[in-house]
Image (tube, rainbow over all chains, first blue to last red; front, side):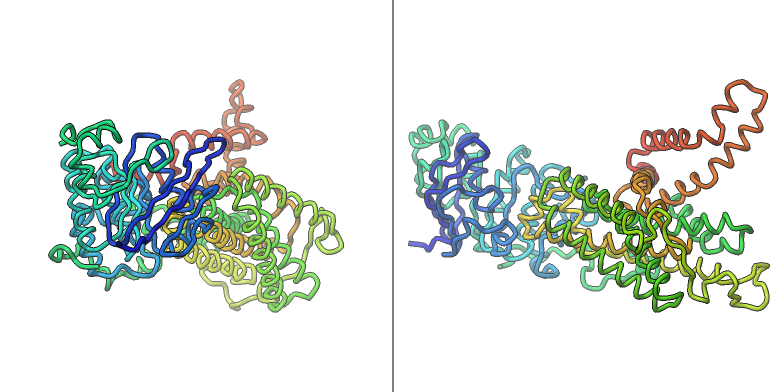
Length: 241
Length: 376
């Protein structure tokens, strides 16, 4: 049994009058890539934002490496080693690619070996290094957002729909990049709508519906069981290949 | 972390950046437009040589006012353009600088020690007020922060008017300058380039060099890692927080730096006028002028402060004169002379502002830089 790096116990979140998360329980083992799947509005993004402290959990407990971070402020959660890549290519468009990366490396200059590794994952960023990030294409912006998250060693990456709106060729590049991150031993919790990408990457899978985790297990089991896919996600893998 | 791919070779040298002297002075933030570079250089040279280029007191007073407003507007650009903070308390810090120097020189005597003590007290008061306003109100939504700064600024203006024993009330304070800055002081026994180098000219150069130094310091700050964090916060504070940056702390530090620069500008203004009162530094109309100068010049560019302040102060000082000449020249023609009568200068200044905002939505600097990139 792998040690959980992140653990959520009965987490509930309200946003204004809306009750979004209804007692979310799951664990993310260290060194694994865990997929968080579910239809639109299931509560996936709210789960990530609640872990980051961007929305406060109204009850329940979030533990990171054994430490209760439920009421911790977002900057402190980030400083504890959790990187968050929001959906919608969340970069700073007025800053250059370089400045975006430097900004993420809070502990000092980016180590040149790490920079080399990062640009090996996302070679397109090299060409636009000193240009405003707002000039990048959608896929390049997404690459920059992920590169920013790994600009310095982090203990956990929370990534929200990195392939959303990307062309198939970009999706394949993104899958390769995440495979490389997995191989580098990064712990990742990845929200994804693209089941093809999810099945290619996930060690473990969590399925959400209506603010609850309705399934957890090995990704390989879900991939091998079309009936389970149909029941949980209303789809089969064949349709997405 | 393990490198998972062969080394790619970096497209840059991150370890040994080589910079020229100009890049170092301008913190690698070059004007990025030939026309802009030319205009900035022209402004710098004319301001540096004003005492020797023009005769009479109005040109040198206009140039001194431009120097003061460049600092004041640049410090406001740090707040508005780089941090996205809309504050109406900027003239309050300008006023604190003016009153600090004025009260010290009036009470303690016309010495450099008084200037130093007055400036230090003003800087301390501004820093304390800026921290208090920042920590108490930068957590709330932007509109509430703006309202709070408006309320505090109004309260300080009323206080300055009511505490007449200390501030001189509505009449303000007139004071003597240290000996070396008085008109009667002669640095050189003979005129230099046809101009008598007296204390007034020394006072002008004191203003010029302090303004230049403060502007370059602000340019350095906005181009530092701290400045980049401010820009990131302005664009999306939640993303900046998710990277580990404490937004309120950064905004508060930006407010303090901006307030300190405004205080220095206020002190310079008082030294130049040998007077400080509510109308010269605390007035709300000055706050409106600062806003106009930032917008006309171009927000978030720093150089916009130079262009905006120069254009606006020149218009304030000479638009009436130009209109007078135009009105006289057009006498005999119906309507037109009345339309450009000097009394209507504010109307035309307003029209000029509307046209410039319409024609240059990113300010003059934004427009000039855009022109360069579209040519490229």
